Amino acid sequence: MATSIYEFSAKDIDGNEVSLEKYKGHVCIIVNVASKWGKTDVNYKQLVELYSKYSEADGLRILGFPCNQFGGQEPGTEQEIKDFVAKYNVTFDMFSKINVNGGDAHPLWAYLKEKQAGFLVNAIKWNFTKFVINKEGQAVARFAPTDDPIPKVEEEIKKHF
Image 1 (cartoon, rainbow, N blue to C red):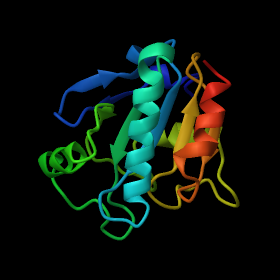
Image 2 (spheres, rainbow, N blue to C red):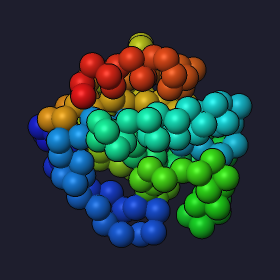
Image 3 (cartoon, one colour):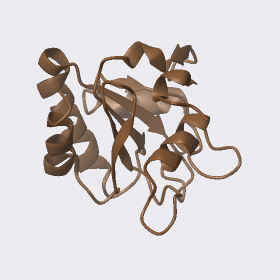
């Protein structure tokens, strides 16, 4: 069993393999994202706001993982996803589309669910589940899709800078 997120890698949205070790020493928000859901607008706007507010001075990193496991909320290609997030001026790191549940769930997401269990079940229930990772690569908090990034996630990340 892994001891931190730094033991994982994932393909970025351009298909390049990225070791999560590159985030060592940074507070991170790891989130499964989608372009076609009622909470899409508020989540992207607030995540972009948090990134612009805390990335430079405090080193916040946000890792967006598109996921189409919830009723076709992220049906597009990687290019279509890139075009979509450009409308929100997303400059945080976006990854290739993954599964977060089931036998083919990305190993990082299996790890996150193990470290920060969900309410009733460990499964990711919907897109925009947000995990806060401390500077040591540990998952220290999990927020539901209905929890907007501001104020709840912002309050949590500030504890770890």
